[in-house]
Length: 274
Image (cartoon, rainbow, N blue to C red; front, side):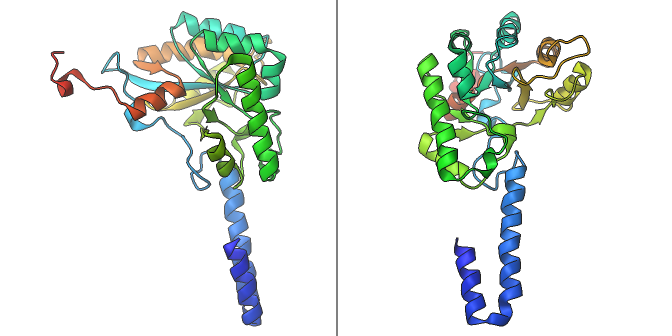
């Protein structure tokens, strides 16, 4: 707004400056657009692309590092319950970024996510592909309606938000601040909504994998393997096995937030015997 006002004022006071004033306005809009189209950008406000450094160490095993598995676009009846079973088999926790209207349609699945020690986060109410084109009221309504749906189904208050497809605009951060939500994107994703090869999806997720990474998979809108199986169901067991071999412990984003606020004290630092 300041830039627009300044450009108009400059053009009125010095009419021959109008090409420079217009160029400044256009450059500003291009920068804002690029920031919104780059999901991992920090230019539009705070954005978790990794876990906070203090959260990357696990309290249980000083030699292990924490990592976050995030699962988007559910709950999906055909897939989510099987994902929960796989996570249970490997004693792993995940954060599910759920679509509000799907939570309303499948409240029992949403409750199962929470009951099995995972976390539900806000992925907007309708998952509109034009979410980044909404104005302040539309953005706030999508966030608020999803928060209400999650709360009504589970009794939980979501603490994290991910925009549909990661695309956003300058109106998002003020709305998240009012709702006490933290924006989260990812460190890497497998493109498992379009990639039908579990091996390629797994390769994208595990390339240069390290503690503090945030990984993205999908239970909703999942691509299918040539055999018709949702890709996540083929990828997740292999991913969890790779994490165990690398001594990387999957935790929820909420656990990472708590740990970042109150990082565990090592036996050496506390003066206690190890």
